[in-house]
Image (cartoon, rainbow, N blue to C red; front, side, top):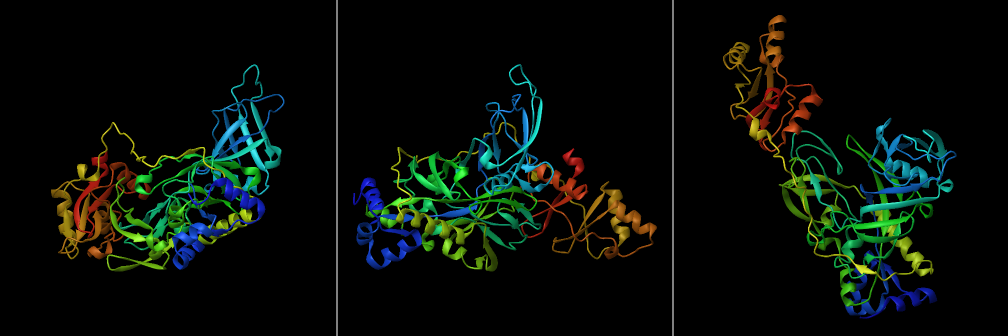
Length: 490
């Protein structure tokens, strides 16, 4: 041991503490070495600012007169959870407004609350003898309620994968809009500033560790859900008082056609107790690896295309299969740095002291997938052989195949079996009525497709959303390998 928590806190109290950010620590270790850095530096500060979809808040409103015991309640038309005491609720950041849906959700309610805005509260009850009020419609501000506790069961992800999309359509995900055919790449996380990257063995991060949270102070109360440190996917369970926080570090966000979330600012001070911690807090973006993962395959175990460093991710483009792919972050590096600098300043000014964890967090937890008792069927289980015509054939040929094969959909390809379009029995009927003779006049070239490994409910939803009754099944090279229709799904 080089130092103790008590010694570092005494230095904070006397104004003698030496604090640097994780980015600054990299240069210090590079120039002076680990031994000198361990002796000279007392605390390294970290920071991250990005979407934390497990975020939410417990609120207590106090009793109305006469009292009510909520059965259902809404905050700014966002449904909150009531399964607690009479006037307690939990609002989750991903719950969307009943009115504004994808534009506004629980994360925005939390941001509005810490901004000092008035929040509309509507609630109803089945009534009891001690809670006779059936309905209430009122407004409140943060100062007017008793408790407002930010409680995030999964926060401060150790790292994120880099998401890309190999499919032929845009995907709307929690990693943002992913363009088809590897049109872009999205990642998240603060890299060398990320708290759990600077103490991956949880020497100083545990139950009771005091942290920067949402612009105020908070605490770690355990490992987060889906905590999987053996795969470098550690997470934290954190809490803090919303009344201490501000909206600069709590931002409601909407993801197009996916849903809502909350950007949360979090920073952890790492005390340099020994040389090992000095070495770990000097980790650079070039040493931090993650995987490029294909979200175009709708499976839990999506294909990992290759590993990549956070240093490469910081570039405007990354290389994938010989192609330059536009790359951008879902997190804010600017705010990650600002959080680390703010925490550094708080410690230097004697406003923030360190807590030794009451208990360390597990380091051997393995993430388990959901147990499923019913078999999920995939497109490959139900597809049939596609009836094909080439893109230079006559309409009469297509019509004969529709009759001979009792099939409403004829897939159009070139001579190499690459998908070019689709023609239906309705298209043929319309062509005869309008006296058209060229396939180019009736073919649908923009075809909605599926792949062998799509679950059948995904295929069904795709048909419903696009008002169609069949999907050609193609492989990664756009070669036709079959077709699935509404008849198979039924």
